[in-house]
Length: 142
Image (tube, rainbow, N blue to C red; front, side, top):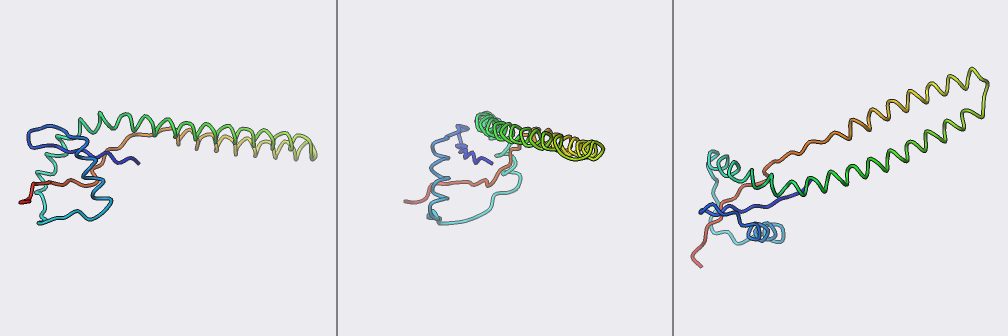
């Protein structure tokens, strides 16, 4: 998960540094608020619709980075798993009666196929863009 703060000015400009500053203030301390209210659902939907293309553009790099790290993790897990199955197969080939050995090797193959299917399933990822919060910030009297 990655948080991507965006600030949409009333004139239509997207101010990323302002968004980061507001987000940092929200995380650090409770900002001074003179009046709390709620935005109508339609305004929230319109604001998110206006910000979505920019969020997708800026979020692409974050998604690419998260996806690359996920793929690296899966590759390490795949390498370790392949090695573990190889070691187990070698051990099974050295011990037991031929019929028992073949049975155990078949079971190991089934286990490996199930493990590989699960790994392939985890390779498929889709980006999801969800608003965490939508705020309207207005200048105060001070």
